[in-house]
Image (tube, one colour):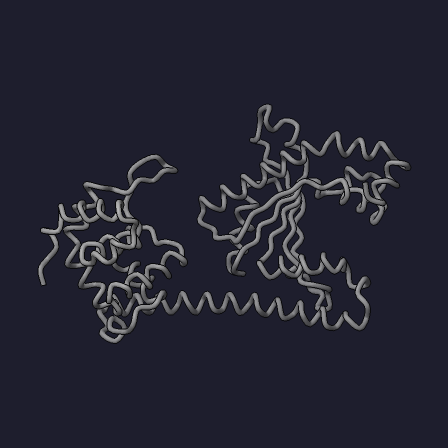
Length: 344
């Protein structure tokens, strides 16, 4: 029991009892809000770094009561249940806001990023106070539907700022010694600039990939004969396999290394291999389709998987990346369709 708990237990034990009487409901609410956010943003393909939730701890509850001197703690404290969305790029903020505002009843919205006060302390974020919508009915929701939950929406750098400021215990500018105030404000400005630059780099990369795709469409010899790197491979796969899922960046980075392991260094060389093995890959996929364990059904290879299938038809060394028993099984299956590989 910390100092604040001990004092509150002696002075206002009814508040402690009230906390324990209600906190389980807030825990369930925070978990429900977390689920709704995760599901909604995933379905709408809004990319985020993380989604988390928590219910307020007894230590934080007691400390906040003493720091804020509330008259009615259970009405005044709005973050008994809380969730946080941490995202990557500033341009995604609008999509996240839209989905939150469609998914919940909004009681309050405070955008601490766009406040006009140039001298504001720190690097703010977007805060909502929400309730579940009225259509959440039934025993599961009856005792949590009217409770409030705080949702924080932050970029990764805003989240980093908040974590450091929390560790330093600086909640407002007046808490900061004067000789450190200027440095902290300068640092928050650097974080904000870095957020802008990350967005600029993302935009520039997307423009570059689009130009590459246009060049590939036109069979631009300069682009097709340059050494393969991840952005040129992404543009190529979007052009070559527009109907297949494009994998995560890490998976694509591994594919670049695998392609080069097979002695393929340019998009032109890769295109020749994919064209030569196209009929064999189609027959192999029809006979041995990949299985999606989540959906519990057969599916199509991703764009990365399609390239790997083609490389396996032409390189036994590439197949040997697998353990021996499985490698032999792959070779045996590939041999069933090798007659469909076009001769050079």
